[in-house]
Image 1 (spheres, helix red, strand yellow):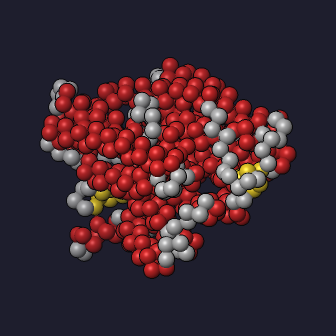
Image 2 (image 1 turned 135 degrees about the vertical axis):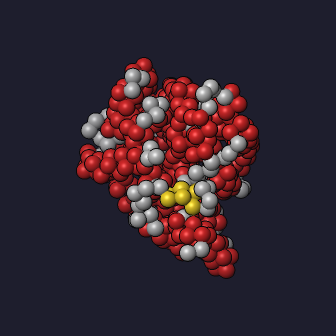
Image 3 (image 1 turned 30 degrees about the vertical axis):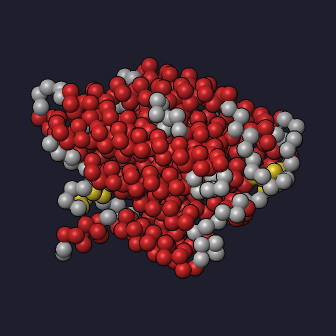
Length: 485
């Protein structure tokens, strides 16, 4: 078989997404920009589903394509399933919202699909060059999505902030790649690991390159101290876009950071472990403390995402298979919790038709919309890590991985940050159940959004315990693939 054709078949999800995004762009152009949103969204969701089916043949061993630039293994397959599911949910949840704000153009699902293509390339990158291409493809589409409401000042501001800071982070990342190439003589992650293992002494140049690469990737996952864009962009971007940003790109960037550190810089684990511990502690503490003063729902969820990234990085700090498995388990459950929370916010409107933005708007929600209040309470309890809800178990898993590796101080700080973070999750529940209704609320998000809320709430509830065994097994298999020789 022709090597190029063989590589395209190995990269099945990306091939489907590439062809699908071009097809969607043409369909949108011919159908008309204002009439094509609903049918084109359904087409794009179907394409995402087809891309997911191409992952059914999960490779037991890693398969390399495009002369070592791309790798297909259980690790990338696990993350791609999460990314594709998050992207499909972000498309469907946006339909009633874009209809209400009268910006329902066909470019939205096309941009989501192009961003998803870049995210899938990121988690399969076996080389620093393919890493950068995938990351930039996802970033360029994300900049446009953040400013999708062109006529609204906050959305334009969010897009501009994201673009400027994202370009700076990309430059830092690219500078780190050039340093690594200059001192290692290669951009292949496997070759970089061999160079580091073969050198008897620590290379300061490689270490500096690693620091710059980690800084660029930390921006993508909103880890402290590169988190400054997150609250402003979440607040200004359209709510479905903020939901997408909180889910799919976080999963892809976390997976990319894990692959770069474990596969490419595994022999230098003692060096990058210290950086990960600092980033994890800073993210957990700042995300927990800064959210206490927030009154805006999207800013609250933004700081919540920063704290949750810190908790996930606790699993990366040990640098072993158990820690990576816990991180992947945490990522999967986090996506359901955060997407469910955004779905509830999207489902509500004030009586005058304006979107719900403040925590105070949810006062007395249990009396007027008990189902939505119960679902949001489940998501908040789960994000707080309160048993027996599903969110408790991945948090316990990452702390257990840290303790088993001797990182007891890190686990203790994480536990304290969880207690602090529980305050603002419980405060939101108190507002819904114990405050008197103030703002008149209506539910206007459609049956599809309601079904997705119910599904996510069931998954995060004690019923989701039924999914723990297969989810943990899939996470362990994906982590094991990363450590195969």
